[in-house]
Image 1: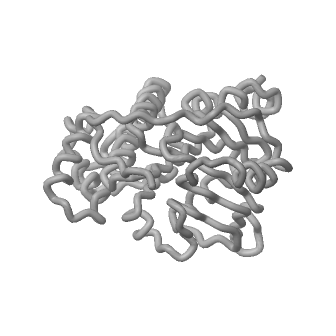
Image 2: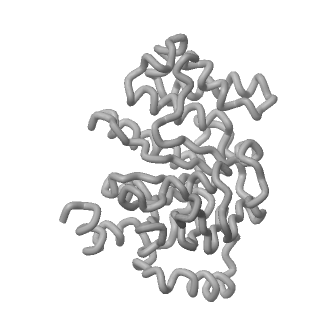
Length: 278
């Protein structure tokens, strides 16, 4: 079972995923059933199998399957309306799947409430940041630690967040709603990290940000990944996402159509035409 992340100043080492070719949807499930049983690899941190999610009579997610190993940075790319945010909400416990399996650390998530998933190490930075605008920066960060009872370590983690995001340290007493978009994204990320996540899910972290701030946010994402935190990144900027990630999945109209090493997806004609403007 993976060790939970406990300190940003203690740099760990993670194994990078073994490069794989791009895998069409038709081969994803076959590969999972066959090769997974033959190879003596540890169980993935997160495993999704044939997940379906509906809004009323509309099926937003149409039976997707994916896995994430401990320590990986995996990205899920796709156009608006493809189902990326819906997938993250289902993992966070904010939406209940119509069918399928969700396993985290070899245990089913299907009947685990959202707050317990946070306590178990799953944290979501939502699209649009979702900060508490009328609370201060520091109060927002402490809200991320609401499932914790270790006051001394929580206080130490608060200082680690300020070291990771120096701009927030300068604004710790400022109302979060008065910050710039990039600073609010930092608040949302730092708040999620205060829960000590094993799996950090990021939903469109670059949305609406100036180019320099986008660069800073992705630099921070890489740094968090280097500490050993497992990351599932949803990002409309496919180039940035694939450059940061080790592996990727392409989601189209609620179905995964491609999967593979991020470098392979970057070189794919289909991905370049659809998402990279080639």
